[in-house]
Length: 469
Image (cartoon, rainbow, N blue to C red; front, side, top):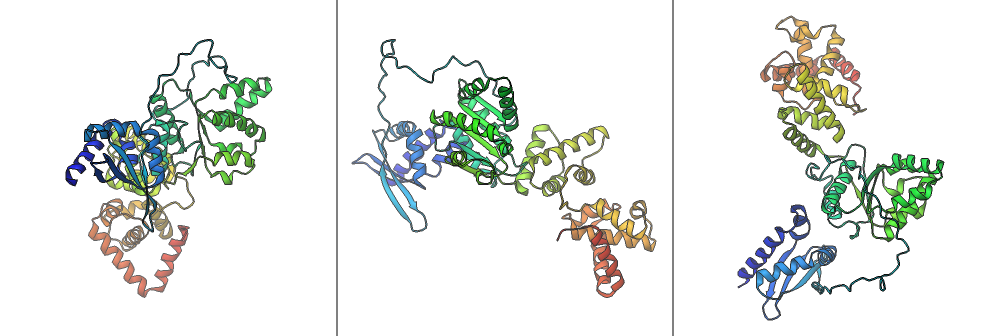
């Protein structure tokens, strides 16, 4: 009998899945575990991993779940939750679902019973949300570094201003995708609620607008405009740290919107506690919703982003080149896009294939970091400079002793300081095969064990790389 009840629950989930976004289903419904169905009490018992998920389901999806349950079990089914309140000790708490409240038709509004609204103003004009339609959730690739902020962002877009995620404060280093995420929230929210006044604004533009309003004596108009926004998205608010008047004005706008249940989304390169110069009364408001960190994407997420960009733009970039770019772009999505755009431009202008050699040249010019990874070009340049030999001689088929020595040392250092396979190193140093590289590395290693002067020469070359150990 329990099997058939499980099948009915699966049918219920199937109905729910057809009526919500995929990410919504994964976030809020997949974690639910069916436990039992009491036929006498007509009650379904399910387990949820936290009290918060229970509260969220009851607040936003109680009608959908009631409809799906009744369609699946063919009865007026009640829902009962077993909440995991202490995962380590296995403690749970069972609570009854409240079920959907009956909806009474509101009384007709007439001039006699209409309440006055002290905050009512003239009907606001149509608003350009200043959003980038290209920055959406569809191309915001999910990874370990951004899973929580992305999930929360989707939830906000579904129910702006009506969840505990208000305000939503997201922070992280430059290039990790903060602007993309908050823009995606705005785009999705505008799509779901076309009537909402959604506005994306940078902190710098907000400050310029405020300064102009003060100069023109229109500060009240400036404040009144921002108080009509339903979803206010402000980027890079760390730029206000030394602007007390701008912060005071934003405090009044923030307070007004928050009291009216309007959604506020803020982005910064640091958490609220590190915003020097911001008064406590504003910091506490920034922190009363949800603070989420966007970390720099790891190598795998960078690879996923690059592959997505290649599919979208119709690019053909070899897998080893994508791996190399992902490892050297330092977790910056902007650097990833810049490198790919440069590769495409060089490939078109010079009618050349996109390969590792071209990628190394682009990375060297496009990604400026202190701890820059060595490339084959870097190694060849230093070794050739040390021995006074040209790269053309190293690439040649000549078997002259000095040329062979430079070639072998270059291969040895390339294998030591880059993550390339031997076959790739051989291709980039004169078109040799992997066996030549392995032989060269072995020859250099054996000589280092017995030749102190040679050992000193290699150390001198390595020191010239200025590597940070």
